[in-house]
Image (cartoon, rainbow, N blue to C red; front, side):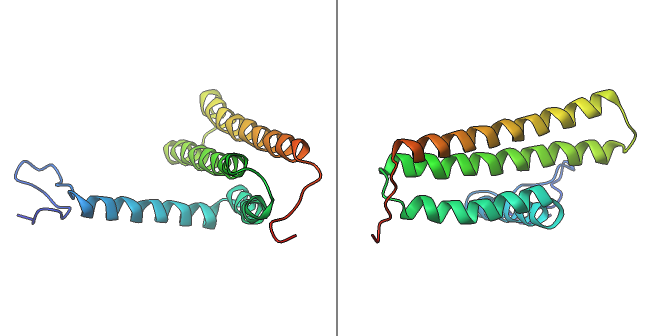
Length: 141
């Protein structure tokens, strides 16, 4: 029998789960693995990460109210989360079958539409915040 906190079989045949802090550590490791897989296999995610790596520091150094900085950074994370969820849906569909099927196409198209809408929302948010605060000043200016 396995010790508490280790994944293994319990007496009933059901795997035991880590508890407490160890569960949190394992969940974080799975999350890091997922981000790594997206970076390795998903060009769109890599492009959005590059964009976020440019825009997040920009949002920080612009002389804007804190709430607007949080909004600018938040919409970028919203795009990344949506892209990860879209990728998860696509992976599940591809795991089941590579055959063309109208429902599989619809599911993939819906995921793509979700990413598109978050990108439009992010672009509109950035545009409106920058326009409302024009001319822009930087913290070091």
